[in-house]
Image: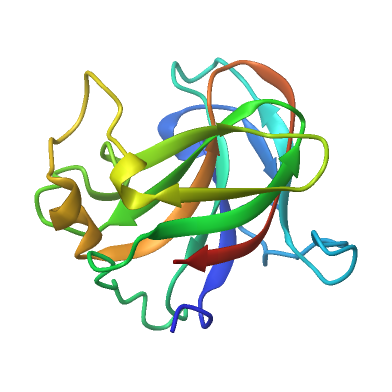
Length: 176
């Protein structure tokens, strides 16, 4: 159901920052090898996060539907997500991006997420949606189940700035 989507990257340059992410946001996303089973391909981002924008960031995401549709899905009856990760030992945030109308600032609003720390070797992360939360102190306040009713993508983003180097690998992303 969600396998027809696509990966992409993003950075803080549209907000006035100077952070850099690879693959570049204006290019086709290129998968990396090997995946968590030692073969196949997975999503990987590298880059640098600066403090030129107060909340500097880079990230990557997965749209749940094809590029020509970008249709949101009702995930309110689903349990959560799982994925395999490895990386640089830094903390990241996985977010579900909702198109619910109560998110006044839409994609850049305070979407529901969960923070995790990467490990040097592949490790599975399973997160029930009930463990997702909004960050304190900013953005629209939305009830989780309302947000889950209209999910269009899953994002992985950096936490903190500046970061002289970033490396995050994600494989086996699933709605469970």
